[in-house]
Image (cartoon, rainbow, N blue to C red; front, side, top):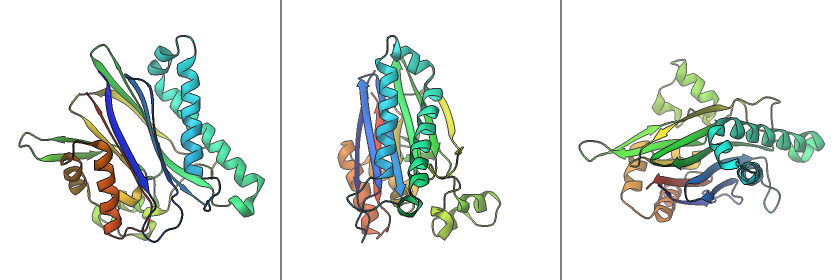
Length: 260
């Protein structure tokens, strides 16, 4: 088995600087790392925290993969290595803030990172997540309709309000605290990192998004837009353009991936 994937990102409505960044790194046809990140506190034409985070995670995972017996070691301990990579990024971003609080006071990032792998006839995924980027699982139900499930949970103040029953899930998307992260990378010594691993099926389609998309477009319309276009790059472009047409004032990023 191998993986089919595509992605796209663009600057948000009336914004000058795209602080979203995405990366898909194929180590071999059966081992793919997908990362989507949403940065904050940067300036145009200067160092971007989301880009820095993606590149550093990719570099660390590639070093593990390239070592003798590294592929098997990586796959067997994917959650451990991914968590360590995210912790490293947290320290790097925090170092910028410590070195120059005036320039890098808001230098931080949210990200979702997934290692997809297949061995013989079994495909697996291992995920680490922090912040309010998201991973969705999309497929068609028995009636042929688009079915979508959010696999990550936003770490935001607004999500706490939802969990406490103070606002509804629909109100979440309009609440000012939906973008207020509880523990962004670079801001705390020990960030909150969610992780899990599991088997995946060939009919599973995975969508990774930044909040510029998923706070503008509800899950079911997102799934329909994705399933209407078999070209993954074009589908991601369509999602970004749809969010822009709704005048979502955050940046847009999307990755689609499927085991084939």
